[in-house]
Each structure stands twice: as C-alpha cells, then as structure tokens.
Image 1 (cartoon, rainbow, N blue to C red):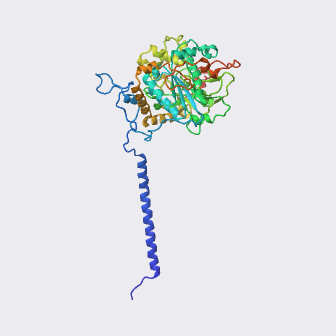
Image 2: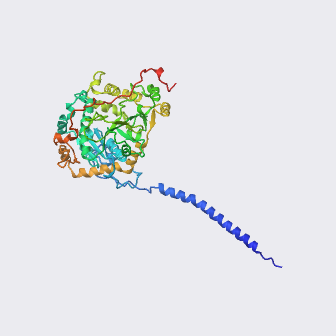
Image 3: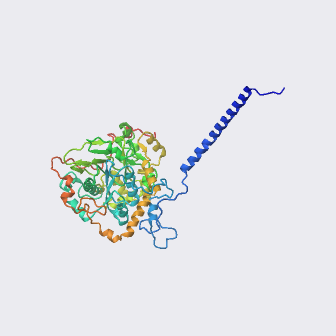
Length: 528
C-alpha cells in the first residue's frame, strides 16, 4: 500500500519553510543594515573633491606677502593669494555652503552690541578678531585706527565689512577731543602728558567717548571696549553667544565685568595666537582663594606677579544717558554710580606676549630710555617695564633666552599639575571657530571684495578722503573714512549733564592681588 502524507506532515513542512524564510530575511537585514549605515556615513564625510567656493583672483593685490619661488631677482608682485596665505587660508572647505554668508544678523535680534577698539594691528590679526566676535553675536565695531590698521589697503578691507566703522586719527578728531569734557575734569588727569602706555590709555578713553555717541545713534544696546589681542569667551551662557549672555543680565545692572584670562604659551615660535594657543591662566576672581594663593609662587613663572600684564578684566556697559568711559577697563556715569555685576564663568581671553616679536614691537613704539627710572614714565605694569629694558639692551639670543624663561611654559609636568589644580585651563572654542572661518573662505572673500573696490578707486582719492564727516547731515554714521567735524554739542549730547556726580579716578590696568607673605614656606611647592 502506498504511503500518503497526512495533514500533520503538511503542517510540519509548511511551518519549517516559514521559519526558514523568516531566518533568511533576518540574516539578510542584519547583513545589509551595517553596510547601508557605513555607506551613509561615507556619503556624509565625503567632500567629493570640492574646491574652495571662493576662487583666488589672478589680479594683483598690494599686500605684504611672501616671495614666490623664482622671483628673487625681480620686483615682488603681491596678490590676493599673498594676503590669503598670510591669513592661513585652507583650500579644503569645512563649510561648503558658505557662499552667501554675510553675517547680517538682522534688526530684530537683541541686544545689539558694539565693540570699540583702538588698534594699529595688521589685517592678519584684525580680520579673525572681527569675525570671531560676529559669530558670537556682536553687531557693530568702531575701530579707531593708526599705523598698519590705517594704511589704505588694510583700511579698505575693514571698510568693506558690514557693521565695521573705521575712524582715523585726523587733525579734526584730535581738535575735537582736545575740547572734550574729559580734558576739563580730574578723573583722568593723572594720565595726561605722559608717553607710551599712558598716552594710549588717554587716547582709548577719548575714543570710547566718541564711540558712545556713535553706538547710541546706531541703536546699540551695549558697548564693550576690547583690544585686538583680546577675545570674549561667553562661557556660562545657554549658548556660546555674548548676545545671549548679555540678554540674561538683570535689567537694573548697568555694567558687566568680564574677568580676564591670560594666555600661557607653550612654544616660542607662535605665529597665529588665536589658533595656536589653548592654555590660559585663570583670573583670581574665578579661583578659590586657597588655590590662588597656594599656587601663587610657581604660577608667577619667575616674574614679579601672577599675571604678566593687567588682571582687572574688561567691562560692557548699557548705553544710556550720561554714560562715560572710566579708563580702558571700566565705564561710569556722570549722574550715578553704576550697578556692576561680575560674571562667574565668562571671561576675556588676553593673548599677551604670545609671540617673541611682541618684545621688540613694544620697544619700537616707545622712545623712553631703558632705565628702571625712565620706564616708569612709560609703562604702568612691572612686566612691561622689564620687557622693554630687555628688548632695548639685550642681544637677540639673550632676548630669546629671557622670553623662554619668563613667558614660555615648557615644563609639561608642571603645566599638567597646574591644569589639574585649576590654575590653568584649556579653551578650544575660539580656536575652532577661527580655524573654521579660515577654511570656509570667509577671510578670502572679504579680501577679494576689498580688492574689487581698490581696483575702482585710486589710492590717491582714498588718502584724500581721510577727513570726511563722522556724522552726516541726517545724523547717520558714515560708512567710509571718518574724521570729526560736527559741532561739539552734537558730538557729546549724551554727556551733557550737571556736576552732581563726578565719580572716582579712572581705573588703570591693575595687577592681581599679591599674598601678604611672599615666602616659599607659605606657598605649596608643586615640584616637591
């Protein structure tokens, strides 16, 4: 009799086939899924050989650059690419969709912030400084320029940037500032008629007075005075934004103090401080007292103080009636004592003496004699005095040795200990932002825009326009080169007030506090 499969046999075979098909599909899915994810990740990271979206111009651009190979025997022809090389431009873009960025934040974003600065720096320092602060929310820049910054080529680049106002040190500006209320009061008087740093301090204060008027007319809410070797570090805000930081300040606060951190370089061949320096010494305001005083001796690095230069930070002020500067580090008010707030996390990063050439650059700007008595007329802080004397009397080799001993932190073990104890800190955000801007073509784009303008305007006409008005007949800040010709009453309308409150003397750059007993026994020795 032939065997016939019963119904249970068919059911078993069907169940087996279904189970096998399920396992097969599951195995196929597990195989394809990681392959798909890997392929997707590859697509995300692949740049496809894209070139810089802002091509280099073949046209010459007169700017300090490098000598091209083979050109030693003929006159150097400088071009936009020279400026690009100076700024560290990379050909591999990080942000391939940069093309239409213009950093125009719009009129509806508040608060609006202006930075005022007096500078003689070159374009390789000023451009990264401007655009870094644009990224973190600064709206306007009032740049009082001299030296390199006032040269036709550099100034044309600066003028082409939206939100940047360039003010030149013209005869008209000096005449107006000579009639300033500041000269008729006593709070800045002890800094008058002295050379070098004292002269700069007075000039900064006078420029800040002018900038208050400009900022108010431009609708700004806050004003900050910074040098072009300083970057705001808006730590503690909900986002990395100085706008967000100041938006959270209580409404009754008039001024906000940013304690400064000081750069601590680890090499003597730094070329671009903003992208090569990541280690900073914390301000004593951001350290527990036992940590600050307990590590004071070793943190001085053989110098006379904990910081090389100043330690009393910089401040931002609400733009309001009767506002006035109180030296380069603070703001005041003619009618009241401002309510101040010191930030617990945010700071100003001060990149001081980051390059060996900073020694000679300070020497070349001052005509004082290199003696202990004479340098007191020129410099307010001890380290500046010592550095000036060394730069004026030592050989190049001796200067480099002194720089390594007093400025450069080469002991990695010691650096590690100070980092662990919180005296040093690593900060990478500015470095990442500025390097990203370089690689995305921002600086290249700005330089090429200025090159286009220069090709239309002759340098002679640029130089002859230095005395144009700071405020036009409609009371709008001019976008071109700026002198000062408007009436004294108009220029200082914010400052018109009575003498009910004159305030204290201007606050100079101050050194950090010194322990009462500067003995090794009272301080912990890290290398013990």
